[in-house]
Length: 392
Image (cartoon, rainbow, N blue to C red):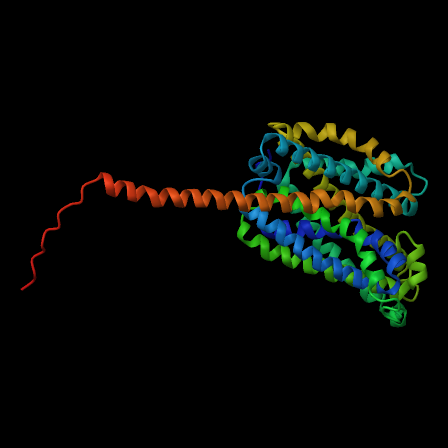
């Protein structure tokens, strides 16, 4: 196992970049194609559900602060069921890592380097990911701490430069068909990325000051809610509903509208850099979580022995899990159902089992504590009370 530690602030920044990740570029297209100009309301719905998921994860993580979900899964459900839980998380995060790798490769290949083979694009992004995973959780935490301010500064500058291109009328009429389209659009967003936050159950044991995790994690969730809502609103106001629904990388196309008197043009490259930063961190955390889950699943002593083999497995898997860009629409329907089991069902069941087992052990200890003094009082003779001298 990795012996490194990170702070609660580093954990929060890592989770922010993880949640934003590839969803910042891909999701506006999916949301607008379903909910139209009310896509921002879908983000708010999922943000509220995300707060509930974080509460579930925090209750489960704080109950076993020094163990991952794989370790206390075996403790609560036994060897066989616990091993099944470990395999589920190992395969889930492996598929998620391959999915993110393919998304990055598709973006670079279709927008930035269209003449470069897809495999080369994915290999280039995987090399620093594998190296960062090999160095451990401390390096990953410091990397997120360094990259976060740059991403935020560029995001704020880009939003300010887009103000002249914004048309608030694109947001109206609001809810022309009621709220149901926005509710339906929240379904793919719930699976990607909200249910993926369950990876925090593998990272909590590596945090030093765990008493601060809850506060920072809630701040992170609210920050991602605000960021996602702003991205949806800005994209709709700049591109409009029709253009956003047709563009697979709507946020990137939004940055193409930035033109400042022929002094600043082609600013979409800057937005691409932001997206690569957040996607790189998400890919790095997913790859690290896959390795840690495999280590604890098969009781491997040194996690570094699995880093290189998994890198060779990840490349062909990423070509298989998403064969073309058109399958991205189909995965938005199937993937949330797959993510529901490791993202909600297993943590909820483990929390319920832990509560029942803790209550049962507490009642057992209480009954023993009540019966022990009673039996001792019957077996031991009572001392005679001697009168105490009264003070004069």
